[in-house]
Image 1: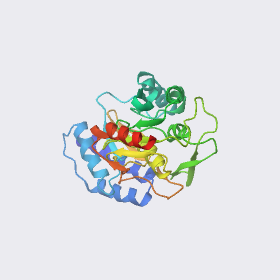
Image 2: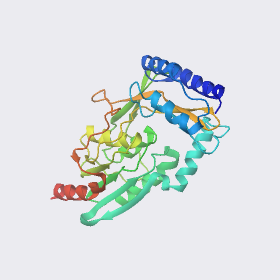
Image 3: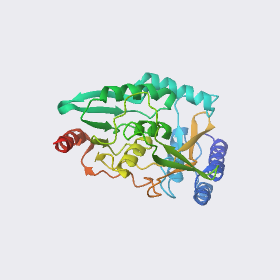
Image 4: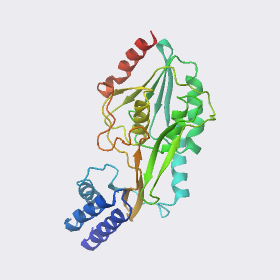
Length: 297
């Protein structure tokens, strides 16, 4: 990339951070870092993305604050809500709506893997209902989010609705800078599949790469003491973001909100969700089976 292209990209990213980042004061600090940074003439787009991301995350370590490189040119309608939803819906169709597998293990323990994302409810609602239908008669449930890297909070709330009773329950909230208010997320009273309910034991499997939406599920169920978290401390991304095209091959992702627990006022940003039973991710499933067998006894 030529120096004028680099300057244009970095200036655009700096302006976006200043305008949209969920913490305005941190946004100004990050912008100052970018203002002082120097990127060499001739660096390619992928390397620029790596270097700018390091600078973006240097102030507070926000893992959602990134400059992403795409080998393929970004769509002309990138950032358009309808086009982005269509792209997510197409990906959901190729990945089972985010339900990677459903399995009945020994001792009547059901296993549901959620990967790669919690897709929007329009794409994920039916697959989730189908998975919960298959798990309905199980004595215990394992939710595997070791390979889950994000998703939308509405679908996390929908999934959690199957794991509690029919009474409305506030699960979490998002504070949006642009709106200066908290948007609440509650359990859904009417579901398309059978409710697993609040009493049967649940384990959630996590890894060091579990991120964002997967962390939301683990954090919410842990805070509500509805599930035992087994595996590794998760990656630590609690700030929903928006994407902005700043170059044909570069997208700036800017966190525009932050998760807020109605119980503690906290979230998992930077710390990740710490497991109740720490074990390597590769050993989390047998550990969960042993734990649930003991719980059932």
